[in-house]
Image: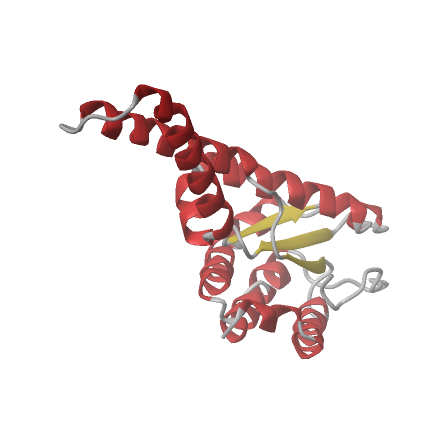
Length: 205
Protein backbone atom coordinates (compact mmCIF):
# COMPACT_ATOMS: atom_id res chain seq x y z
CA UNK A 1 0.00 0.00 0.00
CA UNK A 2 1.02 3.63 -0.41
CA UNK A 3 1.08 6.71 1.78
CA UNK A 4 -1.61 8.29 -0.39
CA UNK A 5 -4.04 5.55 0.72
CA UNK A 6 -4.24 7.22 4.14
CA UNK A 7 -5.56 10.45 2.62
CA UNK A 8 -8.21 9.08 0.27
CA UNK A 9 -11.91 9.76 1.03
CA UNK A 10 -12.51 6.03 1.46
CA UNK A 11 -9.80 5.87 4.13
CA UNK A 12 -11.37 8.76 6.01
CA UNK A 13 -14.76 7.07 5.85
CA UNK A 14 -13.41 3.76 7.15
CA UNK A 15 -11.52 5.52 9.94
CA UNK A 16 -14.67 7.36 10.94
CA UNK A 17 -16.55 4.08 11.19
CA UNK A 18 -13.89 2.62 13.48
CA UNK A 19 -14.02 5.69 15.72
CA UNK A 20 -17.83 5.45 15.94
CA UNK A 21 -17.55 1.84 17.06
CA UNK A 22 -15.04 2.82 19.74
CA UNK A 23 -17.06 5.76 21.02
CA UNK A 24 -20.20 3.59 21.22
CA UNK A 25 -18.54 1.83 24.18
CA UNK A 26 -16.50 4.55 25.90
CA UNK A 27 -16.92 8.12 27.07
CA UNK A 28 -13.57 9.03 25.48
CA UNK A 29 -13.79 11.20 22.34
CA UNK A 30 -11.26 9.80 19.86
CA UNK A 31 -9.89 12.02 17.10
CA UNK A 32 -7.43 10.89 14.41
CA UNK A 33 -5.13 13.36 12.66
CA UNK A 34 -2.79 12.25 9.88
CA UNK A 35 -0.04 14.54 8.58
CA UNK A 36 2.37 13.96 5.70
CA UNK A 37 5.22 15.65 7.56
CA UNK A 38 5.51 17.86 10.64
CA UNK A 39 8.84 19.64 9.98
CA UNK A 40 11.25 20.47 7.14
CA UNK A 41 14.49 19.31 8.83
CA UNK A 42 16.61 21.81 6.91
CA UNK A 43 19.28 21.59 9.60
CA UNK A 44 19.85 17.95 8.62
CA UNK A 45 20.41 18.98 4.99
CA UNK A 46 22.98 21.59 6.03
CA UNK A 47 24.80 19.22 8.38
CA UNK A 48 25.00 16.51 5.74
CA UNK A 49 26.20 19.03 3.16
CA UNK A 50 28.88 20.21 5.57
CA UNK A 51 29.95 16.61 6.21
CA UNK A 52 30.25 16.05 2.45
CA UNK A 53 32.34 19.22 2.11
CA UNK A 54 34.67 18.09 4.90
CA UNK A 55 34.97 14.68 3.30
CA UNK A 56 35.86 16.27 -0.03
CA UNK A 57 38.55 18.37 1.67
CA UNK A 58 39.98 15.28 3.36
CA UNK A 59 40.11 13.40 0.06
CA UNK A 60 41.78 16.28 -1.74
CA UNK A 61 44.25 16.87 1.10
CA UNK A 62 45.26 13.25 1.62
CA UNK A 63 45.12 11.97 -1.96
CA UNK A 64 48.51 11.14 -3.50
CA UNK A 65 47.83 13.31 -6.54
CA UNK A 66 48.40 17.04 -6.74
CA UNK A 67 45.46 19.45 -6.84
CA UNK A 68 45.53 23.23 -7.27
CA UNK A 69 44.85 24.75 -3.86
CA UNK A 70 42.85 27.60 -5.39
CA UNK A 71 40.32 25.06 -6.72
CA UNK A 72 39.64 23.45 -3.35
CA UNK A 73 37.05 25.98 -2.09
CA UNK A 74 34.95 25.47 -5.22
CA UNK A 75 35.18 21.69 -4.97
CA UNK A 76 34.18 21.81 -1.31
CA UNK A 77 31.27 24.10 -2.18
CA UNK A 78 30.18 21.68 -4.87
CA UNK A 79 30.33 18.78 -2.41
CA UNK A 80 28.30 20.80 0.09
CA UNK A 81 25.59 21.57 -2.45
CA UNK A 82 25.40 17.98 -3.68
CA UNK A 83 25.17 16.65 -0.11
CA UNK A 84 22.48 19.13 0.92
CA UNK A 85 20.40 18.40 -2.18
CA UNK A 86 20.72 14.65 -1.68
CA UNK A 87 19.56 14.98 1.92
CA UNK A 88 16.62 17.16 0.88
CA UNK A 89 15.31 14.83 -1.83
CA UNK A 90 16.31 11.33 -0.68
CA UNK A 91 13.85 10.76 2.17
CA UNK A 92 15.45 7.63 3.68
CA UNK A 93 18.80 9.44 3.83
CA UNK A 94 17.36 12.46 5.60
CA UNK A 95 15.46 10.27 8.07
CA UNK A 96 18.62 8.30 8.82
CA UNK A 97 20.66 11.49 9.33
CA UNK A 98 18.13 13.25 11.58
CA UNK A 99 18.60 12.43 15.30
CA UNK A 100 15.70 10.40 16.69
CA UNK A 101 15.37 12.80 19.59
CA UNK A 102 14.86 15.71 17.20
CA UNK A 103 12.18 13.82 15.28
CA UNK A 104 10.40 12.82 18.49
CA UNK A 105 10.34 16.41 19.75
CA UNK A 106 8.99 17.72 16.45
CA UNK A 107 6.22 15.12 16.32
CA UNK A 108 5.28 15.68 19.97
CA UNK A 109 5.10 19.45 19.45
CA UNK A 110 3.00 19.07 16.30
CA UNK A 111 0.65 16.65 18.06
CA UNK A 112 0.08 18.99 20.99
CA UNK A 113 -0.52 21.92 18.63
CA UNK A 114 -3.07 19.85 16.69
CA UNK A 115 -4.75 18.87 19.97
CA UNK A 116 -5.66 22.51 20.60
CA UNK A 117 -6.16 23.55 16.97
CA UNK A 118 -8.76 20.81 16.48
CA UNK A 119 -10.68 21.84 19.60
CA UNK A 120 -10.12 18.54 21.40
CA UNK A 121 -9.49 20.41 24.65
CA UNK A 122 -13.00 21.92 24.53
CA UNK A 123 -15.10 18.80 25.10
CA UNK A 124 -17.61 19.13 27.94
CA UNK A 125 -16.04 16.43 30.12
CA UNK A 126 -12.43 16.87 28.92
CA UNK A 127 -12.30 13.28 27.66
CA UNK A 128 -10.71 13.85 24.24
CA UNK A 129 -7.95 11.61 22.93
CA UNK A 130 -5.91 12.56 19.86
CA UNK A 131 -4.28 9.86 17.74
CA UNK A 132 -1.68 11.82 15.78
CA UNK A 133 0.12 10.08 12.91
CA UNK A 134 3.12 11.62 11.11
CA UNK A 135 3.83 9.71 7.90
CA UNK A 136 7.28 11.05 7.01
CA UNK A 137 8.48 10.51 10.56
CA UNK A 138 6.87 7.04 10.85
CA UNK A 139 5.53 8.07 14.24
CA UNK A 140 2.27 7.99 16.20
CA UNK A 141 1.58 10.04 19.33
CA UNK A 142 -1.41 9.79 21.66
CA UNK A 143 -2.42 13.02 23.38
CA UNK A 144 -5.09 12.61 26.10
CA UNK A 145 -7.12 15.38 27.68
CA UNK A 146 -7.14 16.03 31.42
CA UNK A 147 -10.01 13.68 32.31
CA UNK A 148 -8.65 10.64 30.46
CA UNK A 149 -7.29 8.38 33.17
CA UNK A 150 -3.56 7.64 33.16
CA UNK A 151 -4.24 3.92 33.43
CA UNK A 152 -6.23 4.09 30.20
CA UNK A 153 -3.30 5.76 28.42
CA UNK A 154 -0.84 3.17 29.76
CA UNK A 155 -3.11 0.36 28.56
CA UNK A 156 -2.98 1.83 25.04
CA UNK A 157 0.79 1.41 24.69
CA UNK A 158 0.48 -1.82 22.71
CA UNK A 159 -2.08 -0.38 20.33
CA UNK A 160 0.08 2.71 19.80
CA UNK A 161 3.04 0.53 18.87
CA UNK A 162 0.86 -1.34 16.35
CA UNK A 163 -0.36 1.96 14.90
CA UNK A 164 3.23 3.11 14.48
CA UNK A 165 4.24 -0.11 12.74
CA UNK A 166 1.30 0.24 10.35
CA UNK A 167 2.29 3.82 9.54
CA UNK A 168 5.89 2.78 8.86
CA UNK A 169 4.63 0.01 6.55
CA UNK A 170 2.07 2.33 4.91
CA UNK A 171 -0.51 -0.32 5.80
CA UNK A 172 -3.93 1.29 6.06
CA UNK A 173 -5.70 -1.97 6.93
CA UNK A 174 -3.18 -2.59 9.71
CA UNK A 175 -3.64 0.97 10.96
CA UNK A 176 -7.41 0.57 11.19
CA UNK A 177 -7.06 -2.80 12.91
CA UNK A 178 -4.68 -1.26 15.46
CA UNK A 179 -7.06 1.67 15.92
CA UNK A 180 -9.80 -0.79 16.84
CA UNK A 181 -7.56 -2.06 19.63
CA UNK A 182 -8.04 1.25 21.45
CA UNK A 183 -11.64 0.30 22.14
CA UNK A 184 -11.28 -2.44 24.75
CA UNK A 185 -8.86 -0.61 27.12
CA UNK A 186 -10.90 2.60 26.90
CA UNK A 187 -14.18 0.78 27.50
CA UNK A 188 -12.71 -1.03 30.50
CA UNK A 189 -11.32 2.11 32.13
CA UNK A 190 -13.82 4.74 30.96
CA UNK A 191 -17.08 3.08 29.84
CA UNK A 192 -19.70 5.13 28.07
CA UNK A 193 -22.03 7.02 30.40
CA UNK A 194 -25.58 8.23 30.05
CA UNK A 195 -25.62 11.64 28.48
CA UNK A 196 -22.32 11.27 26.61
CA UNK A 197 -22.44 13.20 23.35
CA UNK A 198 -20.35 12.99 20.20
CA UNK A 199 -18.82 16.48 20.26
CA UNK A 200 -15.99 16.01 17.77
CA UNK A 201 -15.86 14.81 14.13
CA UNK A 202 -15.32 11.09 13.62
CA UNK A 203 -13.50 11.30 10.30
CA UNK A 204 -9.78 12.13 10.49
CA UNK A 205 -8.38 15.52 9.65
